[in-house]
Image 1 (cartoon, rainbow, N blue to C red):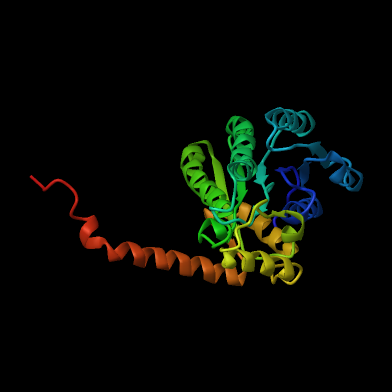
Image 2: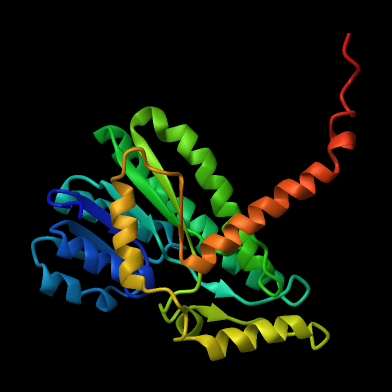
Length: 281
């Protein structure tokens, strides 16, 4: 187990799910946590549990002013941020045609733009201190587009692309990036953080099946959030650190299969792909 004494983690969405489990894990390891959630009351108990090492902060990631205030409070209290965990987010079980423009934009405002805004505010701190790690919680839906979750998958694919580029941009400053791709975990995500379109379309029977399966399967997922938190905390300090961490046996198989299918799909067009350049002189 990696000791966390002297390390400061800023975790969004710390009131539940992976955010809650990570907060528990880091405090148990002796580290300090800035626990962020839309409601400060939902994370205030951490300050009572570890008054010198926990700071509860109200941070709605769609409100830039709350992000600025939260990061400033973290710096005033601890003077550094070693690890940023972008965990805040929610799921939207909707096919493309079913979702409205407002619903789609709301999904991206939290899952993508909120994550980018928090990261943008923390990066100057990490650059100035000469190191740090940004942990972005995505999903297997960021590798494989699931039917019935077009906008959710799109938001997670976007985070994956952002994270890859970010890793190359900040490496010269000693700042790392870790993309976490979980499969199904018992985090109450489906009951607490999942939304459906306001106007579903009956013809999309497969979408309805996805929604029904998610609702009835909640609480039966194979993934253990406490073990996931340990894995994330350990991986942050691994040398060398991988860019991606897939969590869950089923998730690992799904991601490998999706990547292999992508390679095979691209190879089908090889003869076309390599013959569209100008002829060699």
